[in-house]
Amino acid sequence: MKKRLPEGTGVSGWFASPSWNLLLISLKSKLFKAQISCEKASTQSSGTTDFIMTTTIVIQQPPPTQVVEVMNPREWSTGLFDCLNDLKTCCFAYWCFPCFACKTSKDYGEHLCLPLLDCFGWCVPPITLAMRVSLRHRYGIDGSLSDDCVLSSFCTVCVWCQMAREIEKRNAPVMIAAKTA
Image (cartoon, rainbow, N blue to C red; front, side, top):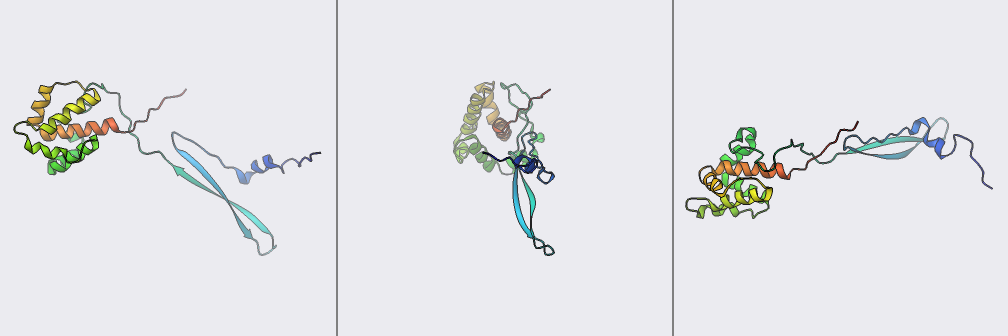
């Protein structure tokens, strides 16, 4: 034979009490976790032990994402001379080009020191040309070998800046948000 607890004293009544109003909210990809801890506190006047409920909310957010506007995937996301839109990259490439080219090569997944072999090219920097052609093929960007050859020969720093911006934009985590009615 089961005994029933009086209303308000059971588990459902305990969680419905005002001291347990804990609300977990998930709002636009923010994750909330709640950790509840009990502390004993003795009152000196009555000699009884009261439980004080404390709530600690730990907020964990996903890594920063980039919202990308819809672009034609068959074109470069930035122009060859769009360095003014990304001054940090432009200045790094201008003041320390070998370091910048090596970093970009590593970000692309190639060997870190690969761009240093460009010094063995006579007229056309072979690694710059090969990386640009490879990048175009990997991302499906329209273009021609002759354009790549001319740009790699005469605008080497700008070509590396454009490739770095393209790698950064294509590899960035993207959050797609749908509007709900």
